[in-house]
Length: 315
Image (cartoon, rainbow, N blue to C red):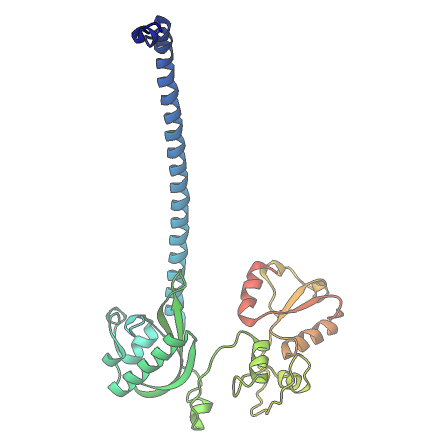
């Protein structure tokens, strides 16, 4: 076998170097363009993300500012006493009405506690109820004797949990109802725990299942429960009957030009419950004006707390 000259076999031909010199610049250019494109896409995406994040931050900031302004307006205009505390029962702010009750300037309220204003036994009692609301996460309304600079008075105190944007409880909002004191319950030696129900149908279900001992009801509701007209039949002992107070038919702003009740044909009306004086008074009013409440209009059941929203939206 002849001896092989490996230097000759593996020696690149001159053409190889010519091709290599031709490909080299183009390869570098393609690589440069590819990396430039990736960098451009990265920058564009980052700018887009930044715009989205800035828009979200601006919107959230505007929402928080609006909420703070709304709370400030409510605090300053309501005749009721109002306090905002953190979860350690430390005062964050309070309105002028409460500050006047205890004789302190609004600028001095932050950082104080109940022990700074009330007797130790009362302050400890208030804190105990704070803890009950924090643990349950449910609002509590109860009549309490509050001592101010003008002496003692009975107030209906509502403690409501306050949550942050992430749904975490971060404080308690107090509201003190100063009207019609002392209360019916207090006058008769009763201490009650009042809670807000989601709606009148919710009250009916709570009564029917024995979850509550008493409830404020619409006039026709006890009769509807006793007859089982809307779900579970339940016996109701009617303890107190009050008058129907004043009733008003409230229309959305888009109907400001309505001059004739007959122009309400086709309207959607909201009432808090089917078996309510609101429903029957509305039906009577419409019938008296020549409209059939069963066919000419739609009457829907809407929870009271949702009615302002529907009116604002013009539903």
